[in-house]
Image (cartoon, rainbow, N blue to C red; front, side, top):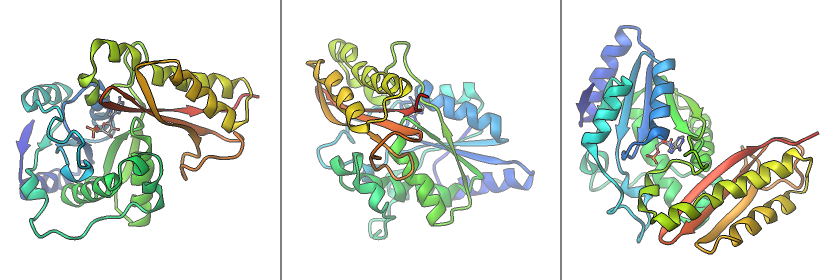
Length: 283
Ligand code: AMP
Protein backbone atom coordinates (compact mmCIF):
# COMPACT_ATOMS: atom_id res chain seq x y z
CA UNK A 1 0.00 0.00 0.00
CA UNK A 2 1.34 3.37 -1.05
CA UNK A 3 0.79 6.49 1.06
CA UNK A 4 0.44 9.88 -0.60
CA UNK A 5 -0.27 13.32 0.81
CA UNK A 6 -0.82 15.47 -2.28
CA UNK A 7 -3.98 15.74 -4.36
CA UNK A 8 -1.92 15.42 -7.55
CA UNK A 9 -0.46 12.07 -6.47
CA UNK A 10 -3.91 10.66 -5.66
CA UNK A 11 -5.26 11.84 -9.00
CA UNK A 12 -2.35 10.23 -10.88
CA UNK A 13 -2.69 6.94 -8.99
CA UNK A 14 -6.45 6.75 -9.51
CA UNK A 15 -6.11 7.70 -13.18
CA UNK A 16 -3.58 4.90 -13.67
CA UNK A 17 -5.92 2.41 -11.97
CA UNK A 18 -8.85 3.55 -14.13
CA UNK A 19 -6.74 3.24 -17.27
CA UNK A 20 -6.27 -0.42 -16.34
CA UNK A 21 -10.06 -0.73 -16.23
CA UNK A 22 -10.19 -0.91 -12.45
CA UNK A 23 -13.25 0.06 -10.45
CA UNK A 24 -12.15 2.54 -7.77
CA UNK A 25 -13.53 2.83 -4.22
CA UNK A 26 -13.02 5.54 -1.60
CA UNK A 27 -13.32 4.98 2.17
CA UNK A 28 -13.14 8.37 3.94
CA UNK A 29 -12.08 8.23 7.62
CA UNK A 30 -10.57 10.34 10.36
CA UNK A 31 -8.16 7.55 11.37
CA UNK A 32 -7.73 5.86 14.78
CA UNK A 33 -9.04 2.90 12.84
CA UNK A 34 -11.09 0.14 14.44
CA UNK A 35 -13.03 -2.81 13.12
CA UNK A 36 -15.94 -0.56 12.07
CA UNK A 37 -13.65 1.32 9.68
CA UNK A 38 -12.02 -1.92 8.56
CA UNK A 39 -15.43 -3.43 7.72
CA UNK A 40 -15.82 -0.55 5.22
CA UNK A 41 -12.39 -1.30 3.76
CA UNK A 42 -13.29 -5.00 3.48
CA UNK A 43 -16.58 -4.16 1.75
CA UNK A 44 -14.69 -1.83 -0.60
CA UNK A 45 -12.12 -4.54 -1.43
CA UNK A 46 -14.97 -6.91 -2.30
CA UNK A 47 -16.77 -4.44 -4.57
CA UNK A 48 -13.84 -2.61 -6.18
CA UNK A 49 -10.45 -3.35 -7.73
CA UNK A 50 -8.59 -0.35 -6.33
CA UNK A 51 -9.32 0.90 -2.81
CA UNK A 52 -8.34 4.38 -1.63
CA UNK A 53 -8.63 5.12 2.11
CA UNK A 54 -8.36 8.71 3.28
CA UNK A 55 -7.33 9.70 6.80
CA UNK A 56 -7.99 13.34 7.55
CA UNK A 57 -9.12 14.76 10.88
CA UNK A 58 -11.23 17.49 9.33
CA UNK A 59 -11.08 20.64 11.48
CA UNK A 60 -14.16 22.24 9.90
CA UNK A 61 -16.55 19.58 11.22
CA UNK A 62 -15.50 20.17 14.84
CA UNK A 63 -17.14 22.99 16.77
CA UNK A 64 -15.39 25.29 19.25
CA UNK A 65 -14.73 23.36 22.48
CA UNK A 66 -15.05 19.98 20.73
CA UNK A 67 -12.30 17.37 20.67
CA UNK A 68 -10.38 18.30 17.48
CA UNK A 69 -7.02 18.62 19.29
CA UNK A 70 -7.57 15.55 21.47
CA UNK A 71 -8.97 13.36 18.68
CA UNK A 72 -6.95 10.09 18.69
CA UNK A 73 -4.28 9.84 15.99
CA UNK A 74 -2.04 6.80 15.33
CA UNK A 75 -0.91 6.73 11.72
CA UNK A 76 1.62 3.88 12.06
CA UNK A 77 -0.96 1.54 13.51
CA UNK A 78 -3.58 2.65 10.96
CA UNK A 79 -1.16 1.88 8.11
CA UNK A 80 -0.46 -1.60 9.46
CA UNK A 81 -4.18 -2.34 9.70
CA UNK A 82 -4.87 -1.02 6.18
CA UNK A 83 -2.00 -3.04 4.71
CA UNK A 84 -3.39 -6.19 6.32
CA UNK A 85 -6.79 -5.50 4.73
CA UNK A 86 -5.28 -5.02 1.28
CA UNK A 87 -6.09 -1.34 0.72
CA UNK A 88 -4.23 0.03 -2.32
CA UNK A 89 -3.67 3.68 -1.52
CA UNK A 90 -3.71 5.77 1.65
CA UNK A 91 -4.37 9.50 1.23
CA UNK A 92 -3.28 11.63 4.18
CA UNK A 93 -3.61 15.28 3.14
CA UNK A 94 -2.42 18.09 5.36
CA UNK A 95 -4.92 20.66 6.59
CA UNK A 96 -3.09 23.37 4.62
CA UNK A 97 -3.42 21.41 1.39
CA UNK A 98 -7.15 20.80 1.96
CA UNK A 99 -8.04 24.36 3.00
CA UNK A 100 -6.46 27.38 1.34
CA UNK A 101 -6.08 30.25 3.81
CA UNK A 102 -8.48 32.32 1.68
CA UNK A 103 -11.04 29.55 1.04
CA UNK A 104 -14.65 30.80 1.20
CA UNK A 105 -17.07 28.41 -0.47
CA UNK A 106 -18.77 25.67 1.54
CA UNK A 107 -21.33 22.99 0.74
CA UNK A 108 -24.55 23.60 2.70
CA UNK A 109 -26.31 20.46 3.95
CA UNK A 110 -29.76 22.07 3.82
CA UNK A 111 -32.57 21.37 6.30
CA UNK A 112 -31.36 17.81 7.07
CA UNK A 113 -28.25 19.39 8.55
CA UNK A 114 -30.21 21.37 11.13
CA UNK A 115 -31.84 18.35 12.81
CA UNK A 116 -30.55 16.12 15.65
CA UNK A 117 -26.73 16.18 15.49
CA UNK A 118 -26.92 19.39 13.48
CA UNK A 119 -28.99 21.10 16.19
CA UNK A 120 -26.41 20.23 18.83
CA UNK A 121 -23.35 20.71 16.62
CA UNK A 122 -24.04 23.80 14.45
CA UNK A 123 -21.86 23.82 11.33
CA UNK A 124 -20.90 20.16 11.72
CA UNK A 125 -22.63 18.91 8.58
CA UNK A 126 -21.46 21.87 6.48
CA UNK A 127 -17.94 20.78 7.45
CA UNK A 128 -18.75 17.16 6.57
CA UNK A 129 -20.42 18.00 3.23
CA UNK A 130 -17.57 20.30 2.25
CA UNK A 131 -14.78 17.85 3.04
CA UNK A 132 -16.60 14.89 1.49
CA UNK A 133 -17.27 16.93 -1.68
CA UNK A 134 -13.59 17.79 -1.83
CA UNK A 135 -12.59 14.15 -1.37
CA UNK A 136 -15.05 13.07 -4.08
CA UNK A 137 -13.58 15.68 -6.45
CA UNK A 138 -9.98 14.77 -5.63
CA UNK A 139 -10.30 10.98 -5.75
CA UNK A 140 -13.03 10.64 -8.42
CA UNK A 141 -13.86 7.14 -7.22
CA UNK A 142 -16.70 5.08 -8.67
CA UNK A 143 -17.89 4.00 -5.21
CA UNK A 144 -17.71 5.58 -1.73
CA UNK A 145 -18.25 3.59 1.47
CA UNK A 146 -19.91 5.06 4.57
CA UNK A 147 -20.99 3.46 7.84
CA UNK A 148 -24.59 3.43 9.07
CA UNK A 149 -23.07 4.24 12.47
CA UNK A 150 -23.26 7.91 11.47
CA UNK A 151 -26.77 7.58 10.13
CA UNK A 152 -27.59 11.27 9.73
CA UNK A 153 -24.26 11.82 7.96
CA UNK A 154 -25.04 8.95 5.58
CA UNK A 155 -28.53 10.33 4.86
CA UNK A 156 -27.13 13.81 4.15
CA UNK A 157 -24.35 12.50 1.92
CA UNK A 158 -26.79 10.42 -0.12
CA UNK A 159 -28.95 13.55 -0.50
CA UNK A 160 -25.90 15.63 -1.47
CA UNK A 161 -24.75 13.12 -4.12
CA UNK A 162 -28.26 13.12 -5.58
CA UNK A 163 -28.84 16.89 -5.41
CA UNK A 164 -25.39 17.91 -6.68
CA UNK A 165 -24.99 15.07 -9.24
CA UNK A 166 -21.74 13.69 -7.90
CA UNK A 167 -20.82 10.78 -10.21
CA UNK A 168 -20.24 8.36 -7.34
CA UNK A 169 -22.29 5.54 -5.84
CA UNK A 170 -22.64 5.69 -2.05
CA UNK A 171 -22.45 2.25 -0.43
CA UNK A 172 -23.83 2.07 3.14
CA UNK A 173 -22.27 -0.47 5.52
CA UNK A 174 -23.81 -1.97 8.69
CA UNK A 175 -22.77 -0.92 12.21
CA UNK A 176 -20.03 -3.01 13.82
CA UNK A 177 -20.53 -3.51 17.57
CA UNK A 178 -18.64 -4.81 20.57
CA UNK A 179 -19.95 -8.13 21.94
CA UNK A 180 -22.02 -6.19 24.53
CA UNK A 181 -23.64 -4.06 21.83
CA UNK A 182 -21.65 -0.83 22.09
CA UNK A 183 -21.07 0.52 18.57
CA UNK A 184 -17.36 0.78 17.76
CA UNK A 185 -16.17 4.39 17.74
CA UNK A 186 -12.81 6.11 17.93
CA UNK A 187 -14.29 8.12 20.80
CA UNK A 188 -14.87 4.99 22.94
CA UNK A 189 -11.18 5.33 23.85
CA UNK A 190 -12.10 8.38 25.98
CA UNK A 191 -14.41 6.36 28.29
CA UNK A 192 -13.38 5.46 31.85
CA UNK A 193 -14.05 1.80 32.84
CA UNK A 194 -17.30 2.84 34.58
CA UNK A 195 -18.41 4.97 31.63
CA UNK A 196 -17.54 2.12 29.26
CA UNK A 197 -19.86 -0.20 31.21
CA UNK A 198 -22.61 2.44 31.28
CA UNK A 199 -22.21 3.18 27.55
CA UNK A 200 -24.14 0.02 26.61
CA UNK A 201 -27.27 1.95 27.62
CA UNK A 202 -27.47 3.38 24.08
CA UNK A 203 -27.70 -0.13 22.63
CA UNK A 204 -30.15 -1.23 25.33
CA UNK A 205 -32.41 1.74 24.55
CA UNK A 206 -32.30 0.92 20.83
CA UNK A 207 -33.10 -2.74 21.53
CA UNK A 208 -36.06 -1.63 23.67
CA UNK A 209 -37.35 0.34 20.67
CA UNK A 210 -36.74 -2.60 18.35
CA UNK A 211 -38.60 -5.01 20.63
CA UNK A 212 -41.59 -2.65 20.91
CA UNK A 213 -41.71 -2.18 17.12
CA UNK A 214 -41.46 -5.91 16.45
CA UNK A 215 -44.20 -6.49 19.02
CA UNK A 216 -46.55 -4.37 16.92
CA UNK A 217 -46.26 -1.02 18.74
CA UNK A 218 -47.03 1.71 16.21
CA UNK A 219 -46.99 4.70 18.56
CA UNK A 220 -43.73 6.51 17.76
CA UNK A 221 -44.00 8.85 20.76
CA UNK A 222 -44.39 5.88 23.09
CA UNK A 223 -41.36 4.10 21.59
CA UNK A 224 -39.22 7.25 21.94
CA UNK A 225 -40.39 7.67 25.54
CA UNK A 226 -39.39 4.06 26.32
CA UNK A 227 -35.89 4.80 24.98
CA UNK A 228 -35.65 7.93 27.17
CA UNK A 229 -36.77 5.99 30.25
CA UNK A 230 -34.12 3.37 29.57
CA UNK A 231 -31.37 6.03 29.49
CA UNK A 232 -32.79 7.76 32.59
CA UNK A 233 -32.09 4.59 34.57
CA UNK A 234 -28.34 4.90 33.88
CA UNK A 235 -26.91 7.52 36.28
CA UNK A 236 -23.68 8.01 34.28
CA UNK A 237 -25.52 8.82 31.04
CA UNK A 238 -27.09 12.14 30.01
CA UNK A 239 -29.42 11.94 27.04
CA UNK A 240 -29.17 14.47 24.20
CA UNK A 241 -31.99 12.95 22.13
CA UNK A 242 -33.78 9.68 21.43
CA UNK A 243 -36.21 9.54 18.53
CA UNK A 244 -37.74 7.43 15.79
CA UNK A 245 -37.33 9.02 12.37
CA UNK A 246 -38.00 8.47 8.70
CA UNK A 247 -34.67 7.27 7.22
CA UNK A 248 -34.77 9.73 4.31
CA UNK A 249 -36.26 12.88 5.86
CA UNK A 250 -35.06 12.31 9.47
CA UNK A 251 -38.44 13.64 10.60
CA UNK A 252 -40.51 11.78 13.22
CA UNK A 253 -43.49 10.03 11.60
CA UNK A 254 -46.83 10.02 13.43
CA UNK A 255 -47.05 6.24 13.43
CA UNK A 256 -44.70 3.41 12.65
CA UNK A 257 -46.31 2.18 9.44
CA UNK A 258 -43.09 1.63 7.50
CA UNK A 259 -39.44 0.91 8.35
CA UNK A 260 -37.94 3.72 10.41
CA UNK A 261 -34.70 4.44 12.27
CA UNK A 262 -34.33 4.76 16.01
CA UNK A 263 -31.58 7.32 16.70
CA UNK A 264 -29.94 8.20 19.99
CA UNK A 265 -27.20 10.45 21.36
CA UNK A 266 -25.98 10.59 24.95
CA UNK A 267 -23.05 11.84 26.94
CA UNK A 268 -21.00 9.65 29.27
CA UNK A 269 -18.98 12.17 31.23
CA UNK A 270 -17.29 14.36 28.63
CA UNK A 271 -17.73 11.81 25.82
CA UNK A 272 -20.61 12.11 23.36
CA UNK A 273 -21.77 8.89 21.74
CA UNK A 274 -24.31 8.33 18.97
CA UNK A 275 -25.98 5.15 17.76
CA UNK A 276 -29.00 4.00 15.76
CA UNK A 277 -30.96 0.94 14.68
CA UNK A 278 -33.41 0.08 11.95
CA UNK A 279 -36.95 -0.51 13.21
CA UNK A 280 -39.25 -2.83 11.33
CA UNK A 281 -42.88 -3.10 12.27
CA UNK A 282 -44.32 -6.33 13.59
CA UNK A 283 -47.49 -7.85 12.17
P1 AMP B 1 -14.86 8.47 11.21
O1 AMP B 1 -13.43 8.06 11.19
O2 AMP B 1 -15.49 8.49 12.56
O3 AMP B 1 -15.13 9.71 10.39
O4 AMP B 1 -15.64 7.30 10.43
C1 AMP B 1 -15.28 6.96 9.12
C2 AMP B 1 -16.34 6.04 8.55
O5 AMP B 1 -16.40 4.85 9.35
C3 AMP B 1 -17.75 6.65 8.57
O6 AMP B 1 -18.40 6.33 7.37
C4 AMP B 1 -18.38 5.98 9.76
O7 AMP B 1 -19.78 5.90 9.68
C5 AMP B 1 -17.75 4.61 9.70
N1 AMP B 1 -17.83 3.93 11.00
C6 AMP B 1 -17.40 4.41 12.20
N2 AMP B 1 -17.70 3.54 13.19
C7 AMP B 1 -18.36 2.51 12.62
C8 AMP B 1 -18.94 1.29 13.11
N3 AMP B 1 -18.93 0.97 14.41
N4 AMP B 1 -19.53 0.46 12.21
C9 AMP B 1 -19.57 0.79 10.89
N5 AMP B 1 -19.04 1.91 10.36
C10 AMP B 1 -18.44 2.75 11.21
